[in-house]
Image 1 (cartoon, rainbow, N blue to C red):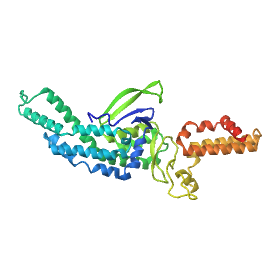
Image 2 (image 1 turned 120 degrees about the horizontal axis):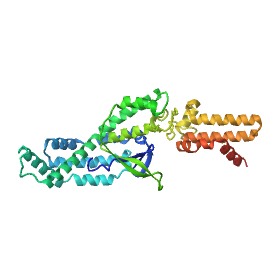
Image 3 (image 1 turned 135 degrees about the horizontal axis):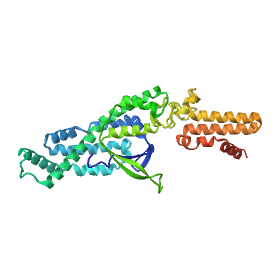
Image 4 (image 1 turned 90 degrees about the vertical axis):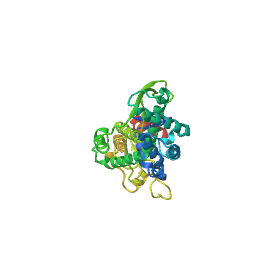
Length: 372
């Protein structure tokens, strides 16, 4: 969108995407599309408002413009902008500013100016390069800019439904083939992704900017700010940026929702979904439901469980040597088990503190405090 590039712009740095004033793990929006495509008929609501859009695109390419269709096309886009916030990342963007831009672009005055530009352009073409009295440098510069802006805006909104459908089918296919990989890292997952997505070429505007290393940090680092001319180019960029950092979509075997994995373990259940059945009258997580059903992930596929098992083995060895009491050993194992359960429920804790909390010195110190 030549005049509206700020509408769909994201900054990528170190496996995270910064958009709409917030930061997310790269790959988040590919997963959002998988989960939100059918919700509230979002895709269907957007797809139906394109008839005038198509008409105006054909007219502009043919060199004329119907003012009524032009005004209707603007109204169609404004209607689409009522629905787009149901889909991330649009819910985080400045929709009000984009509505204002569209309202100011698709006016009767601009329709008349474009019609005059197209008429003059056609008249000049008849002179076969000879200077024409129809030529006005300032008018033509403004007309060319408006022509490009209107056409790119129409194409952006016209393409969103197909962009969503195409990306959805490819992402679903990728998620269904993830388990074919020997390991869940970039080296093993990239061949599957390239086979499904193929080679894609799309316009992308990139610039390098200075970004605070952390929130409120004075230290600046280099980041890439990308402006996307289509929703499809944004989703694919988000997916491959995530894959580069070991992030990939998986489908929960319990609730069937998709979630973003950020490690190479074979996790089968999401941490935020709700199981389809109550347990003793209460809602439980998908992972807890799987454990109750006897379908817990195997320890060899779960580095969290493997770290827990190693610590418990060390505790048992120390108890047998008499370096710690049986009472202390039991309390330490119980604390280690609680930390495992917390890590399995909370990905942030698993990535930041879990392994440190299982270290002998830390675990034993906390166990000693708890026993006092």
